[in-house]
Image 1: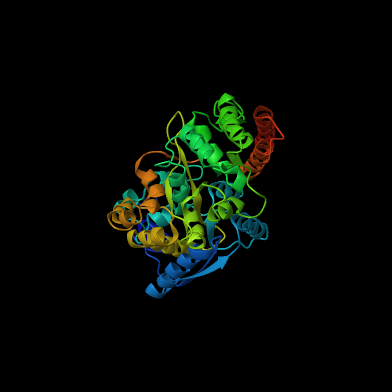
Image 2: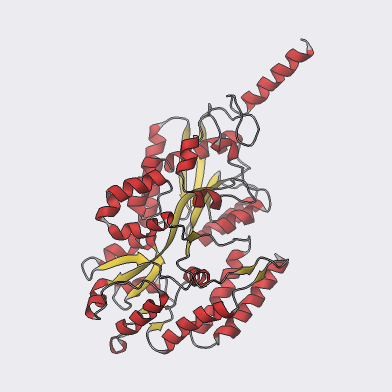
Length: 434
């Protein structure tokens, strides 16, 4: 065999080893061909209730629709439980094939090069077309990148909305939900019924506080410092924290109780008139409320810099320990979950955001028009108001320290400035030590 023929045979063998096919992907390498082997995929997740039911239904549907990929779901409890399970499995050298990955969790996993780059499968012969890629909301695709590469892919994304008790609003003479935080605190005062143990609202979760920070022109970090330093303890951070502390002192708001989902339960029992949470919380409050009172969803109130609503939820990632065929099969499953039809179904059954622009258009034409509250969170996708926190691998630890100090403020045991300075010092220590 001459040299040219040997090189040609070797090149063909390399292409076939990647699954066959031809052409080039966007990263400049040979395109991965269509999957030709049968594979088993294990998927660890943290969904429960209707969310888990919806995922199981789509997974069963996928498994029945073809015979090359079989996906087995494994519930791992809450996201914190899932994170710990993945870290333990990585230390043992036996991670699952794929898992839900919150952004900062994915950053943590990739510190040990544990994640598979999904770019070859996105661009594979049976991957996503150019039309598919342009249909997915850019904010979601950008959010899926770790260090500039697609180590994750969007799956269940959400944002914050304001639930409000329409009957209580009517009784207080309030005709519409608050459009600004100034309106919000004014309404909270009108809605509070101290004699009945009812408040206008309860102290916000950390993600709402972060959104408020950005809405008033603040930020979490000083991007000009090296290493990165906390910036949330400035005048803006103190201002928004004091708004809540003043409302608590006045009896218009109160700290959230220590029981699990205490704020959610209080809203269900008409002990608070407004409840700030993700639009997915609808799935957990609609049945307990039933016909006790009318409620609706409204956009997050705006600050002096407008509305800046944080997008959170989870992406999905594959682990590099699995074979390339298994990674490929896992991505085909994700492709199925996120196609136009299924992301539309997913949004209807779980209240998560639709991932595609075509799905949003379909939902606005029927489902959201008859269920307007369900379209509030999704409406943020076209207004350019969603943002993503600049995640770091240690963000869970940072948010724990921030939440602890904010709770001291809500409990009236600490001044806002002192609490935020303390939180900033702790966050800076984490950022310095990693």
